Amino acid sequence: MVEQRAYQAHMTFARKVIPAPRQIVVQVCDWEVDHFVLLRSVSSAEGVYYEPLRQWTAR
Image 1 (cartoon, rainbow, N blue to C red):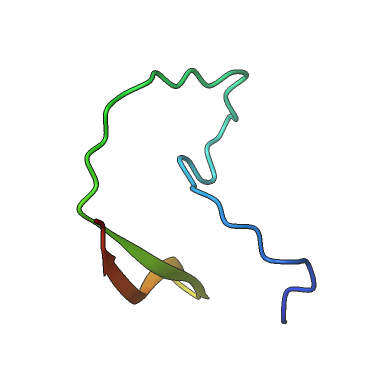
Image 2 (cartoon, rainbow, N blue to C red; image 1 turned 90 degrees about the vertical axis):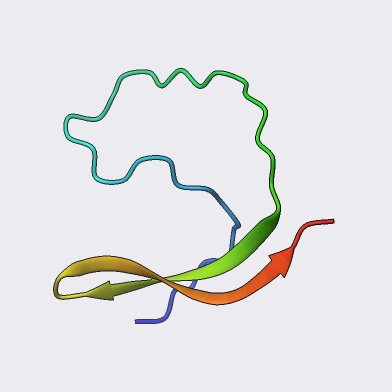
């Protein structure tokens, strides 16, 4: 089935957490990035996996 909603870029920090947390506290941190990757999530009988499509070097 093709998704009908417009694409919305996002970062997933937790998936299928049971029970769902009432509140998530995220602390600020320094995060040095040297590259980033475009991933496609693929559903299979074994679950979801992420397929790298392209990688770029950060400048």
